Length: 463
Image 1 (tube, rainbow, N blue to C red):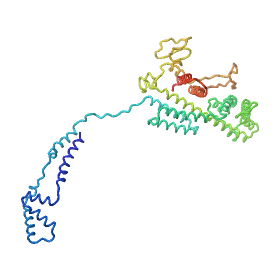
Image 2: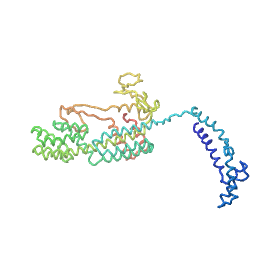
Image 3: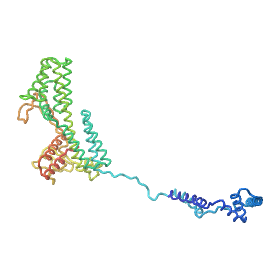
Image 4: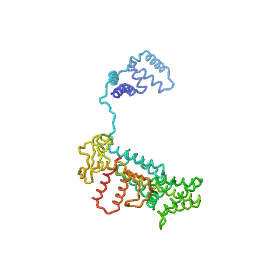
């Protein structure tokens, strides 16, 4: 190896120097050595003693000193004191050759780049945390109060990625954030206010001016509904409403107030009634105050609704982290067996209607079946089939005719089509949160708690 040859060269150079330094003695010893090597019979050593120990010299001793100097100058010092090479110095050419040849000898083991082993399960969990951040980040623009939650999620992801937090610690932190958001979204009267907002939506469809707000309420877009209501106050203030439009709007608001109020005033009926009276009396100030009050209530309702939605999303993330398993075929890289997701349990087919099974490996007919579907050993059903059944969004579009029994009273203008759209994730999150809350509060045996939790983990909608 090169470093070994370099060490040998340095040792060969420093060895003789160290030996020479160790051989150095006093000046008297050097004078004695000169007398011995030159056969001067102690002339130089005696002269050195005369000069070193005595001050003034008499004539005989001066002659003796001159004689010693003359004999010393006549000697050839290099021939008397030849530098003798040590044994290590004799091996210097050999070591130098080995040192030069070591650069041309290949290494015994070729260095290989260390590749970090990637934990597929952890990668899936990190991806789930990233997806939660993206979902909540879309809500931060409308509700800045969620910024703290987003910042905590980023901190959790970073610490989990660096190994500072275990999976259990992540679960605990997510549960803490979920509980905090759930408490913020469960303010007194929020549920009743949301029910009243949905109940007054059909009555607002009667007026062209409030139809946009009504559709936003049906879609639970309370921020948009608040903006629509606030714009009415500006139109009334700028005298942009005709008398006919004011009459229709006053009638629609009055009917909505009567349906909500009854014998007992609700949170929104007073604002609707005040707005209706302001239109009838052409009082823009009274109408504007009522619209602003109604808009503020709807805006706050939208913020609380976003917090509840974020809490449900965290609940789904928490349940998903516990069941993240990499596909055995591709180890999380993505293949046909896992539908390219890298997770275990990827579906291969879709079920439609009553027993209509369509799959890649299905040889059955397409005719309806009166029997149950494919059997499974799992007591809570086939995870692939259950997950696939919730994959798509449930959409419905109907026209109200006023006939037939209904479970709740919903008024709609005849001839208007009322679309409704329900996200499968919201359905799952609602039922899962209710079930989890019931499990914590009710006295349920531990064995049954496990079955309920496993059921909701199994029917979790696929991303």
